[in-house]
Length: 107
Length: 206
Image (cartoon, rainbow over all chains, first blue to last red):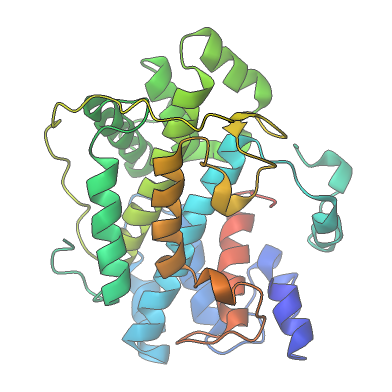
């Protein structure tokens, strides 16, 4: 959906930012990238500094919303991996763009 | 329910979190309340680092895997769970509990509040409610059709409803899902960047 949104609105977002973690060309891109990384990978601690940075840049409503989206995909990732859902062939182009060989995806 | 978070939750997400927590901490279709609380405690130990390996009962082992490395699960591992006594419906319920717990706990932690306290088991027994047409389709678990995200728990109808009850306020209304120009306090592009980056970091390819 990131690519679909970028294409539909002619935003020119480079979706490889998803893999590299570099700030995408969206408002608060650097702060969103930083908060997402910390909340996802450092599961024993609060993302204190990253949350504060997004709070300062975008305000409380933006930071709260971003936390909610990241938390939701912690759920969806575990759900789809846990049930063994097959990777749809329509997603293979994105996998290639992000540096994966579709034939080597686990399912 | 969230106590003194740094960021206040949106009212719709606070309500959804409270409903999810109440549902998670009582008996489900195949697990009693003590078993669900055990799944929650095991997942939390995986996330907070107090447990660094999967061990214990097969239910605890599955909960640990799902919390820590769901992308590393394989058909053979789920087969082994079943051989050791965790049948596919009980495994599916465990998936749903850990997944929804992840939403609740990562949200709470992200907002800067303490994790919701585990209650004592309420002594409730499994409801036994499973969908009469549930069968293995294109994944590892019983389903009511091809597996797609919002319906992936529907072999256990109450769990499917609980998933959607949390998913919609946390992500976006189902009716808006197809709109690439959706905007609330974030644009669709901002929402999908966070979603895609999270999935990449979790090595989830859907």
